[in-house]
Image (cartoon, rainbow, N blue to C red; front, side):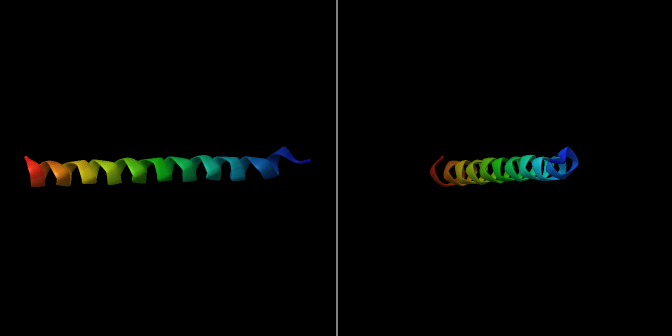
Length: 40
């Protein structure tokens, strides 16, 4: 078992999750902004 092999994959997974969370937040922010523009 080599710890050096696990580290990059772990960091990559964290980066991927952070990217997905950021995209989801931006999508919901955009939807909220569009609803605000249309209905208010």
